[in-house]
Length: 167
Image (cartoon, rainbow, N blue to C red; front, top):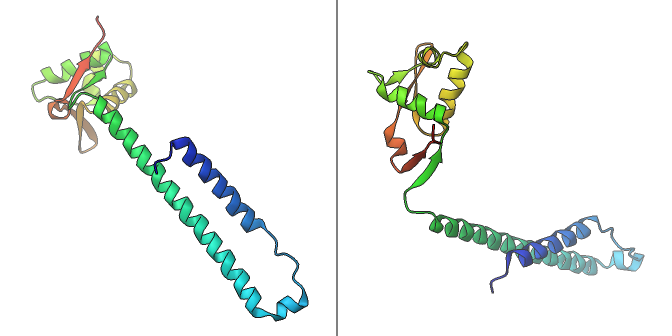
């Protein structure tokens, strides 16, 4: 019995409301005769426990169905993507920085090197650009002493098609 996502969410909402109602429900007035009759109290508590257990089980089943639906949606989306290739759009400045790093003799640069190449006034712009390219997966980061060096890592982007706007 496959339910749609909306049906499952509706059922979860109903179950949550019913659980909230049960937790807020005040005990009904019980007569003195019923209090003395412990078997009726035990039966009442067992029925409530069973009902709560059924609600919790239904809620966990619905949660599992939602998880499976989410996994199916992710798999369908992944199936639509071409296998092993994706596009990474970058700016022309980022492309210029990557080309600069590739042409270096030791292929490692620090923020000071980029600052002098791009003619930045301070190191902050160079640092942030290098960090951005590293987070995008183009560069590898190495800390040597107090300086951080970045190296172009072609292995990280072998399946990527790097797109740069025309200059």
